[in-house]
Image (tube, rainbow, N blue to C red; front, side):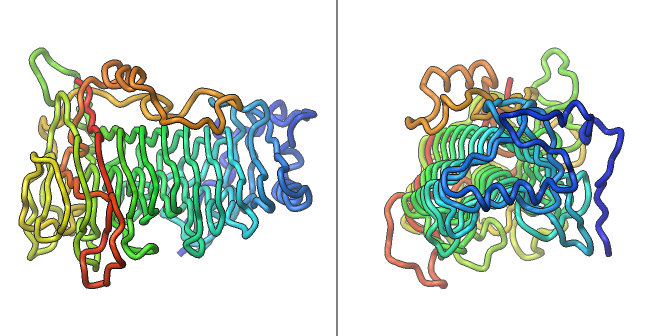
Length: 471
């Protein structure tokens, strides 16, 4: 079966190839002539050596037929002048697809000599456009056996495959990647098994901060172990797609369940708001697409139909819900006939699947925490809180700044900025899912290696994450 994509949508402004968009500039590499574009960009990277910057032209779309591949340390791909809005250059994934496989990746930074490479101030259009998923890599594939990579002020959306942005582990030596100030999404479809992640990280000691992820469908931010990684000040929200999990720590591989030193803090997860007009006195309404977030923060593989057992040495503390909230859900066709489906609640824990962990006092014990993603939203009804989502670029990240903001240290948003977001953008926090929320333990200190038949995640820490629904 051939999965067709719209490759030549002439007349659609998204695919405009107006001559004025392709005018020559002295400070950037043009998109014209199109028939040599992919080879030209890759030749520049291959032949220019370490530290080379490939400058793309503002407001120009580059229709590429294969990935653009970093080739040497400290190279950079960016838009000339470092714009942050729609005038960023756009790489359009435009290569062939047949029989469910084909061109899926725009940027590849996984070469053996790709330490220190930077992807900055560009856009990636994966051009899936409602088609079934294509086998292949993410819109952006970075990491590998490298260190000190940077991805910032990038808008990645509509990937043909499984993720908008992937930082790969390589031979488990990927280290110290920084993913900041990006606006990610939409990613994937909420049709069964057509999902896609926003940001997927499998790299040690990395930093994921100040990103806005809108309308992902699998995981907003997914950590595949990634020991020592800090995830902070990100905003994840949904408007038109149901999301399986906001922030996920559920994968045993590739780090054998090791989440040592991983910290998730000061993030906002929100979504599934009423689409009705609010009448006086109403606090809940209907959502015309039945959009929910099934799990806010998921810890442990059993939340996700894993074949590993439980979680241990996690600490979960200082998580809060504010304002107008709802927790809803109903048993779906993919729920096990033998497992109990728990009633939706803000914080739930299966004590049979957790050991040596510390959680805040408002956790509700449930008898069976397996496979919570099987839950579906109820049909119709006034279950959704009134409110709204932030615009992309607000809340946790996106927007702002050019070269002057690059590579800044520090801890993300100031206290004043966080207060401005909480009050000005949403003023309420909702349990990360209008369905069951599974906030389980998170990692602090490392234990000895855990056998496959023992509880799997080790030593993590989760604090101060908010689920926000605007009042």
